[in-house]
Length: 326
Image (cartoon, rainbow, N blue to C red):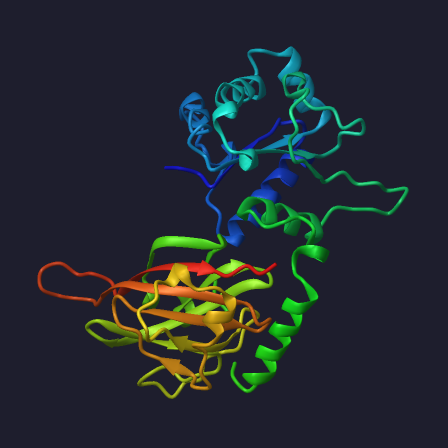
């Protein structure tokens, strides 16, 4: 199994291990598959677990003073073994593969072998004198790095773009889905979604301002219903619950343009005041969230539950791309 995020850390103290596992829990809640040795049962091959490092999409190095000491001075330690595995492959990896997180590391010391490398690092050190403590802001910065968003949130989006978003919200303000299932990446291909297993038939794409609750139900053999927020599920009298990732409006791409070929302006042209659309396999559709951000989705396959010897859960397969504006 390939991890989205591999976490390398030292067992410095119970307090430190607790902090690391809380970080891992936050990342899992976002939807990342996290590799951490706490998941390995006693007796399992930890060396085999460490061999998953080169396969991981990202590696986070939790660098406290003890971590640096072990990496530099204890070649037989788990930290040194993980550092050797990281060092062997880092030159073949993209820039956003490895990031140190500074924790309980007053002098900001990294393992010596990292000297001279220009790495993005995240400062999770607390400063009690200044009443400065890491929290949601640092977690958001880390998420932005993991999915490739610019770190400068103030200048990431122009005022003109913000005005466009405000205009979209005014136009569809009457339209209005939370979800515990999630894909935090900005794009994905071949995503399988067994929607009847998910609360309110909903999967969350992206995170923060770039998040969308995709809510669906079956229509016929090659199509589905896709809903804006507060829309009744087909065949039901129950109203969908509102959520923090509201899809304000939806629209069907009717001219055959590929889902990955539209930009935000052309995508908004497909948005309609209707609250439900029924895309067929091979068609694309547009979602607009509560912040006026847009997402393009392509429906690749529809499967219904069958009982002809082999049961298949109802599911869809789709590609998506959240449209980032500068």
